[in-house]
Length: 215
Image (cartoon, rainbow, N blue to C red; front, side, top):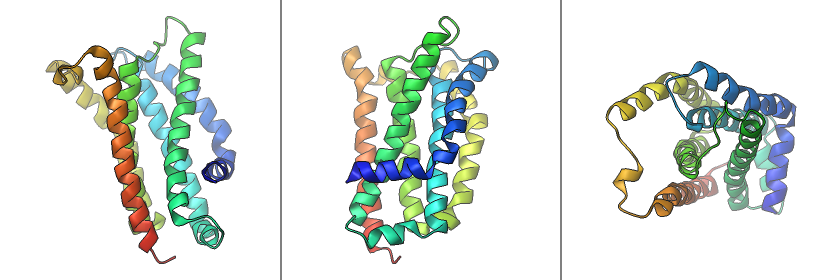
């Protein structure tokens, strides 16, 4: 049932899929050559994935709002709980697709674009979980029309704010792994676990909000 709902979201956003596929190749390549103060593949992958996830998620939300898709689906055997879960799976599926595309790009342009390490993948997923863990419940609470401009502003100022944060972190030698007195493999996998916990908490909040919402 959930897979059918996720497939529905991909079908709703199919008119943007080709553009997003090109962007998932082009953005990391462009940023690797232009943002020379950053090493590794974290920032190009994170930013390209953030934009792609948001634009696809926003396009689906816009269509569902315009044609009252959520209200119509609630009249079917699909439960509101299933509808909420499918949104989180949709976001996760986009992340996996972006990771695969980035890895293929890094292999094709070997020596120019760096492969993602486990820790970089986990950190990307963690930050994206925090961002969408806030976006999805707020959108369920206030609705698409009221929340879209706030999130659009936040997403599009990210490339201007995030490099500054990275510079501060690098200047002060702050390391996420240094905060955890565990073996390296545990440190590398910890962001994945934390992202899962944040996603589950956000999903629970969204389900409670949506179950009480008057459609």
